[in-house]
Image (cartoon, rainbow, N blue to C red; front, side, top):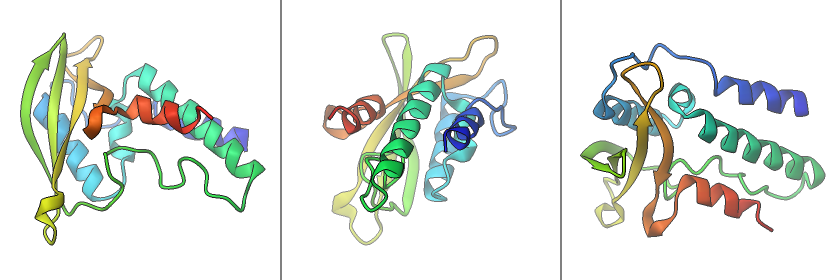
Length: 159
């Protein structure tokens, strides 16, 4: 079980052709939206900072341990990683406003629901410049209600 966790953690560190060295924050947001709508975030994982990759790998390892210890119970990440505020499938995703804040670039990701427009919401990708090229890396996601991807992962295993 630990070997498969290590293997899946290594996937986060692999480069992908989807991220050109000159990708803009809007490009990163568009790739994120496409991955979100396809319910497959694997194309986006190459854009994570090494630190966020490590946080996710640690959370997945803890989740696997809990699942192995209690196979009849849903583990903390039983619905997958919290890439967005709500796990409900949004049938629309668009890049919104892009702003700078404290040396980071925030990319608004607008989720929409065709049949329930009152449920629409926006999260913000927190991007930092990649080291060694002109691209960007995802360091966190600001979710609604003041939560972040990092804080949700930490809280999931704080018990």
